[in-house]
Figure (tube, rainbow, N blue to C red):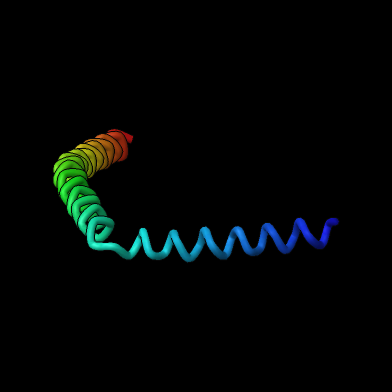
Length: 87
């Protein structure tokens, strides 16, 4: 009985797979795939535009932060020199 069930499942899977391949390789299915892929590519382009905007903003923030640290370092060095001169 178990062997019969396994054979039936195997045959059913083979038939379903064969029919599925014919359905998936048809002209209508190819059109659906092409339109879906085109939509995904458009979505990717939009996401990349937003990524570029965020990267530009982050670059500006990073440059400003580096400038702040450089200014702070110069101020600390000047303060240290003044303290050393006084002592």
